[in-house]
Length: 273
Length: 315
Image 1 (tube, each protein chain N blue to C red):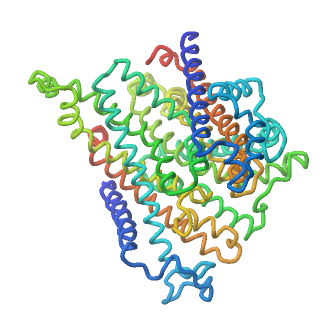
Image 2: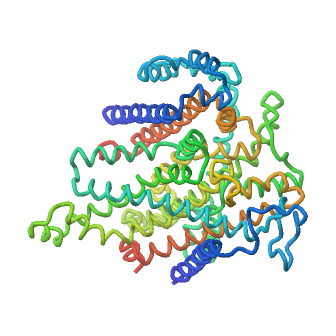
Image 3: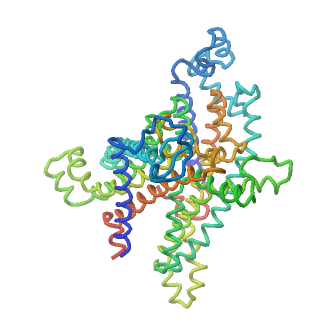
């Protein structure tokens, strides 16, 4: 009974942040680029709803634009995983047991065995810290995740009668994969996408916290935390607000992912009934 | 068993080969070359040539790769450009912080996760289960570096129980050293403990619904006996996999946490290497971390095969 409720809560939180990011493109209460030292470190008031930081920037505006950065990086990184991983997984399932399948899956194991954070740091360190490189660094590690999900889900479908019928009708492996297998694994991919989205938010925050994500003046939640670190003694609010924002966003996505799994994944549905 | 160990060993070798190629390639594709990258834009051409010579960059690509990997095999990680000491010396000094930190975090993870997971599983569906799982949802959502900042605010700034960062060195007493690693280890452990508690709970619930538990109960074992003798042991299999994976997460995750607490570990060494453009340090320490992670995964795989014979023949 509680899963639809949590699903709704997760969806509401996610939509809230996506809207916040969307609105930031056309309107923010204040500019996030202009510094206004006269108004620095003001407490929350009717003028600055969440107060200002040490440069007099409005925190609410920073969080709104930061949402854009975090969501953008995480979604694009998940997109890389889907765009590369799903075709690989589908192809591996279609060629199940072949050398091709073996190579793809062992390659996946390799990427899995690597400490992703270390490699992401290496990539951003060498190619220069930027949002684009953060997307690439996080995205690479999404590829094996989606490949594995796509392969695993497709394998059982290939044994079903309607796929056999399609083969008898003369359809090739590629066409069957696209027309019959893919539509049937979309729901699983959506669930996995939500999970990778939330992991991407945390990874992006971590990379920008250590200065390897989006560069100033682009606000990001992780860098807001890094900037606040020297002020946690005097103005803890600066460290608390971006942190709560990250936790809420990730929590929302996790609830959404769990809820969607309950609704969409036939295995879980059967186990519950 | 021997055959299984050999295949795992081969895959360990392939992983390391792939990792070293990847790291080498990434460092290699830097615009310009490592020498000009390390010296920055204003370096005179003579200095660049001199450093290129010193780094052994004049040889062919193949030659340099073999020099680097061959050196590492015999413990020669090169000489740090900024510190002017062998990287292996730097690593040995830093590993005495990073490794204890990861182990400490692992112990905390297990001591927090086991009771929570077991308790939640046996009280499935009750309010206590629901609230514990709610707490673990929160634990998964918290970025560990932010949790670290919260711990500093609470225990270092307000309560003054711990220092906000830094490491006194083991020579000043083991207890003092452990004390300064407590907040970092806790920050690292909270996410992993949340994940592990959830795995533990679902694994026990799954095991309790198995036929052999019903059989055990039918032949007269009490619920408690059936649980301790049969359910917990079998439920441990997925839990052990996760613990193995988590140790590598803890080692790698320490990179960021060490920066929050200004701990002189491998993570800080990597970041200092990055900011000082000391690529020899970066490349070797990254490779070392990958090696540690791959090695842990290998040991877990073997440990499994010993405990669970079914896994030896599988795949």
